[in-house]
Image (cartoon, rainbow, N blue to C red; front, side, top):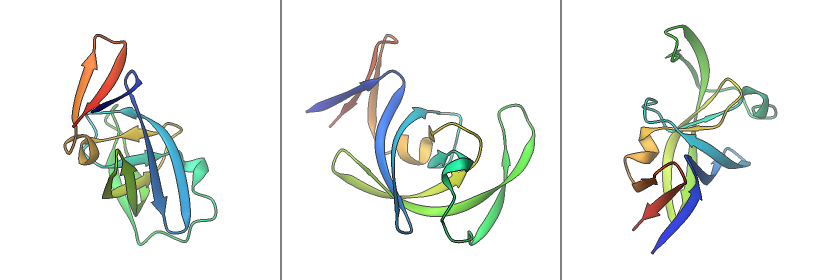
Length: 113
């Protein structure tokens, strides 16, 4: 059984504290973490336990609020790190490395069992 997503995005749900985020996130194999949610979505969450340094793609370093969330995808639940920064949803290798993905010639992304 497999599921298709628009290329190169995955649709996931993630719960952070009592908030649930429905995400269509860009698959970013250059990001080692779990999930990035835009900073504007963070309102209403409690203060994070930590803020961590993050090196951006352009080499700049910033600090980001770090949370732990439960990500749901294809019947799986994963505990992942969740950062709130920027203005895009990104899904990193902490998630992708646990899946078998097939990128079909720039047309769609397939998740295989």
